[in-house]
Image (cartoon, rainbow, N blue to C red; front, side, top):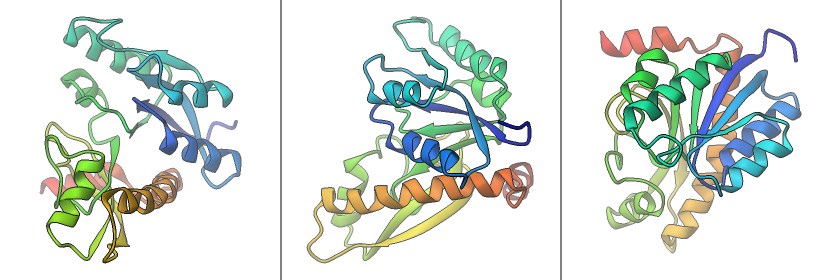
Length: 210
């Protein structure tokens, strides 16, 4: 791959379907990026095999490899930096990042959330819980948000959003499936906009703070 590819690091925990969508977008030429490393905190996650099939370096870093949380955070930050990642992509990563990683990659860590933030975000709002909360609130529209990660759950500036209609007979699982499909496309498209210089993360964060 040429040097103008956006160098990214991916953190994941489970199935890795968003990771696969990013790999596929790179392989089809839709995304000018190179995944420098995949870090997974679950040694049995399907995401690890997805990365290996794609020829991507994989590291298992978790409480098992580093029982001390500060040391784990430092290992994650160092691994990402040593691999040359410039943008960190959270793809179903089920652990809050520590200060070393947040500090070293400040403004350049992205997460995808399965609702239209700032609604239905915050601590404990992940997976099927989000979709059930959307249905319980009687919302007619939900969607996907990609945002910059900071010290608070689902709090940083929003980079991109896409709406998904809530149907009258939706179950939480039905809604989740349709939202996930949109996640896959929006994540890759947003990363391409960053790679192409159409989205400037530093400017976005500075404007949000001012």
